[in-house]
Image 1: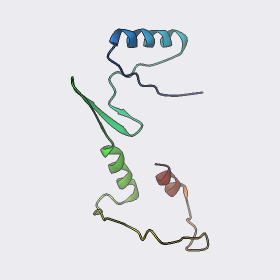
Image 2: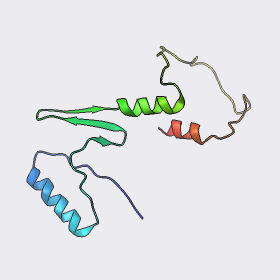
Image 3: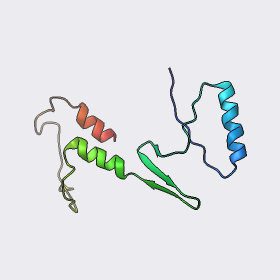
Length: 103
């Protein structure tokens, strides 16, 4: 199974409708309507503008890591620290860390 998302943007509504119709004839598709959220980006539209925000994405990430109530700092870590694989203890389950880094 292959699943992918696509977003059409433009001011030619007739052309977009034709393209969607063409794709529906050749592939199994579903039109989800007006874009609200895509790949971690919230989308708000008005007649004159489109506003993009990652506020929800960041709040979800902070909540998942238990840092939602943390206060911001200018530099959270000394940028000159050199870390090696012989320092510290290996994580018991690295998947949570890997998911956060991948975010």
